[in-house]
Image (cartoon, rainbow over all chains, first blue to last red; front, top):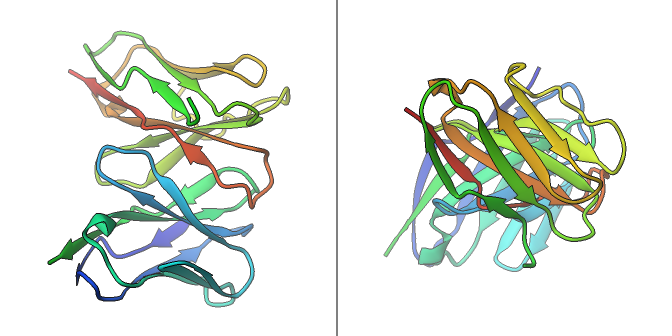
Length: 109
Length: 115
């Protein structure tokens, strides 16, 4: 079975740092993706982790611990445009992704 | 265009009618996926096409749902005898291949409302 959990909502202040957690329990694992989705728009790819550790890409970083079934997305120097839903997705079979329900992030001035 | 294109962007129809949703993947992408996103829920995998291989239909919720793809181009998702629980955003994605590290690129989706 699949179980991917992430907080429903988070609020953070412009300029701050926020960490969005994702825990998963899956019968197979071929990597974990983070996507950003603004309301009414397509999800856009942010990061991919398959090995343990931290992947840094500009203001966004993603961490994975396979033994703990745990990942987080770290957003630094928050901007108002970062207000969006952040989707954690696990690749089981190499193609189909299993998504969590998403975390709605609100960045306030 | 450079991205995944879906049409229509919105569709309102009466319960019991058939609907057809269209997806134009990014040129050169051999893999194509359909997902459903119900209000307040995560994206739900429906079907996957890879080149000329048999599609993976394991996510289709009932036999009212079907999808086709011609070669490595356009795909259509058909829902017959629509029900109110079919109301959702239907998202199409494509990727360069089936390898697990290939990110999927999504279209803006079709918002389907069943009255």
